[in-house]
Image (tube, rainbow, N blue to C red; front, side):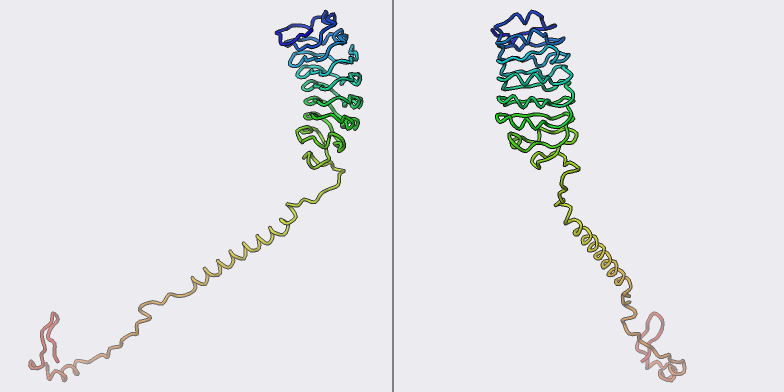
Amino acid sequence: MALQNNNMSGPNPSCIGNLIHLQIMSPNALFSSIPSNLWGLEKLLFLNLSFNSLEGNLHANMRALKMPQSIDLSWNRISDKIPVILRDFQSLIALNLSSNSFLEAIPEQLGDLITLDYLDLSHHNLSGEIPKSLVALSHLCYLNLSFNKLFGEIPRQGPFANFIVASFIENEALYEQPIFQVPTCKNHTTRKPKAKFPLKFILPVFAFTSILIVFILIMIKCRKNNVKTPNTIDVVPAVEHRLISYQELHHATNDFFEANILGVGSFGYVFK
């Protein structure tokens, strides 16, 4: 029996636990809490209650189921701790609890879900370190622990060697492998910055060279201003004229004799 692709809305019906042959469940627009008798559906294979308004917690009346292969409770309002009893869902392949309000640490017991290949615990208030037990999940192909408050070292072994930075972004203080591009822990070995090292020498040399060039240009300009441009008047040699007295003119023209006149100008006669 399958219960999916419907427009079910309202509170979860308490009688849903009577559907003992239900294998697939994925309604929407449900609110209130998950009914406790839901965990009595022993033949349930796929449970999808994502994008509803479910609230409360999971561990109060949760029972382990051997059959489910996929559980998706994402985008609800479920709070409190992630239930440790999830370790007993031994057939589980995909677990998506993202975008709820789970608190505290990720349970170490999730490392017992050896068939798991998809795990999304993003967008919560989870804190503490990433459990080392998750290294044992050899089939894990997808992991998302982003947007939490996790800190400490990211494991190197097992499937963690294949995960990318998006799996760990927006946490408090995760650190480790350079390929993850997450912040370096303060207690971790400090690496010398490669880019800044040569700048210690390049910048002073560049500054000194610039100052020297400016100084040389100023000196050249000052020297040009101090060189006097030769004046045309100074270059042309001055011609000195001897002053001639009236007596000398009178004697030279034979008492201004008319026979010595060469012509008449605008200022008078011209004598030879």
